[in-house]
Length: 132
Image (cartoon, rainbow, N blue to C red; front, side, top):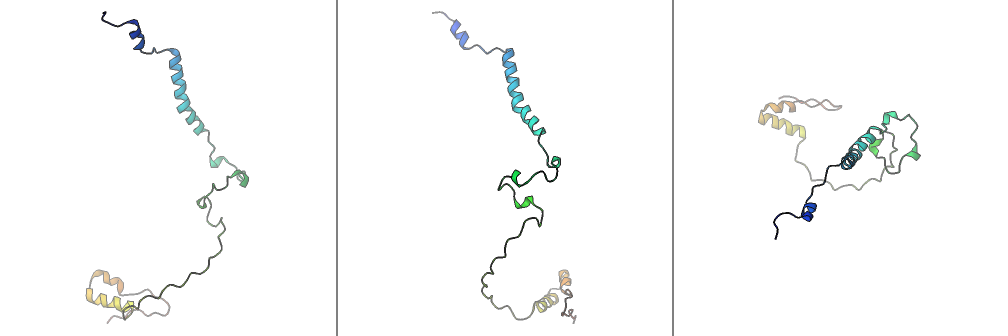
């Protein structure tokens, strides 16, 4: 029995050689996958390059536009729906008005945030709070 490698073992474990054909094929594959995509992306048309009035309804695919693609007021509004049923009446509130409750809270708390409760906005038919 002979020790060492035979010719068939060497052929089986031989590394592939770096040939011109292998280098060119690898380079072509790399350029096709990376450079081709970048080239195509650089040639895309932008919206600013399209003249007004050149895109018509026949050029737009049905269902591809959303309401956000239109300016406010460009889309017609739908018909008003029917009035819904009246809800149940709520429970009765506590005695007194909200103004009286706020005045009572101001007198009892004395905090700085109660200063906002001392006056109400002037509305037609309402009188300002009186300090007592």
